[in-house]
Image (cartoon, rainbow, N blue to C red; front, side):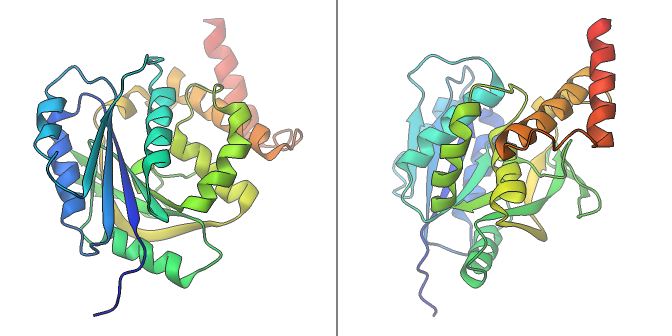
Length: 266
């Protein structure tokens, strides 16, 4: 049997997902690649999440942390804080993110490991999600059917990266970490990887099951929240790349900016 060298850290953020957290954790425990650790951060849940998490406290693969600090009550910022906390506690050379209402295909981390092992220049991987709703698969996405709102980046649960990538990203993102409340942590890293570091890899396999209920329902197409997120996404790209002129001729941005301003006038 081939020796499994890479320790992979799976970071799970949870807030009031007691009914889903068991499914998420068990999907990690069932992975075909066995050299992994699971770190879980509960962000002051008010449901029965703590009871569910305590069922795993004797599992040596799993470390559970409960937020003891004040929350900002801005979901994107609170989730980013949780992931950063777990990142500092992690020991793996490869990191996979997982929201507590999503779950992994059993071969996910082995597929990720093979890409990182075979493509030394790749630092960041995005796999494709299968969209689910209340445990039923609604559709599988491909490269021509992106889930995200801009620019074709998948949810955080589809993201994996090398630990040294994170060190470089955090230095660049530090000046922006308290800006853009609609921009989630995974999107920030994806934009940096694709447009700045240029070490991005899109894996055309549906290895993550993404729960479509919850926060994502706030962002209906062409609604106020959706357009605001698109606008902030463009602005984040401008600021992370330090190219002030990058959006001047971008028709998508100009249209987004125009619609967002109309919403503000209402």
